[in-house]
Image 1 (cartoon, rainbow, N blue to C red):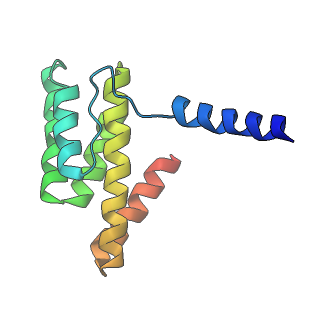
Image 2: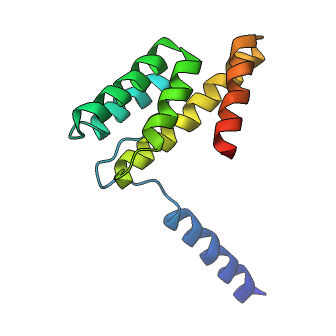
Length: 126
């Protein structure tokens, strides 16, 4: 019985240690759409001019809570070739935070957010 308890404890501890969020490599993790916009800008700082313009459009839309523009611009950035891992993570994080923002707006009764949320879901299916 003690062996099973010890084994279970070791497994749980391993999960906590292995699944931790260390950020030792310097990547930033955004917790708000405003932070996500900054992380996107930083992640694409060395990108070409056209990509920087697209990312800037996403960042501006996130900061201004222009949901539809953010969704459409984010999809354009997502589909670009040669995205680095850090850039991909910044895009994914922004998408998740945007979705959370849309859900919160829907809960407040924002009909536009509801429409844009449906657009986001449709774009993800394609």
